Length: 365
Image (cartoon, rainbow, N blue to C red; front, side, top):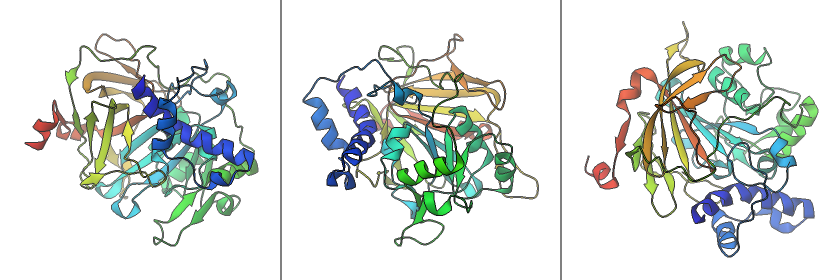
């Protein structure tokens, strides 16, 4: 239960800050860090409210929170953009390759958590596969511009979106800082996203027929039949990322560019309960530099948790459907409650991913 407390604290930072805003407290300007919230949680029994986040499977305070649409924010992941703001408050994080060998991220937040954050991002432009993924979560998709292919897709209404190039909402949702040069200095605020949703008249609750994305385990899934895997190394070349399993916390800690990946809001290293690899085909749009990564159909992948990994298959029947993941017996997997990091892996590069049973094995490579 102690591990769940640490993961839950990441999600409660925003909730506590939101409460302070509502009360008009000056402390709302500086939300409590995850470490501070964790200490408070460890001194008290964690109350199970019976209501759970659709993104994380972790307890939330009210039933109303389970009905609120999430917020998906495009986030830059180059060295100049570091540190990013808000990664530890996200329920789900996607990392996908884009042009030039770099990766870009999309952080998906419970709505209440997102609204409590003063700075999120930095925010970068849309690519079609991210918009499709955001639609799987019935999310409000926040981005600063888009590729030509992304614009064509957004114009179909596949997902409700807030763009920094939309004169109707740009200055309400987004702002620039002076510590970096454009385009690396554009951020969104929770209050701005809320205002943008109001301007666009976007609904704030899930569609009535939405049933969520993940299936969550009711008891800790230890992947008893899985292989040992304490270090996960995606093939991504520019940022050279990897995850190391921490036995004490039960979380995979994230590294890139040769150092810890840290959230600028709380100063803590990013660490997640689950990691999923989804192998997808890819190509280049003719006459462009942009990747085309179809996220529908079916394919292979891997699921990592508690220092173990298993092979999975995935299926997404249509472009508007939700992806489902299955184990070798054909059963839909149940992931552990907590934050989840999903990597889109180009199928032709899947063999370049590396997995190590122990940290020592990784260090000796």
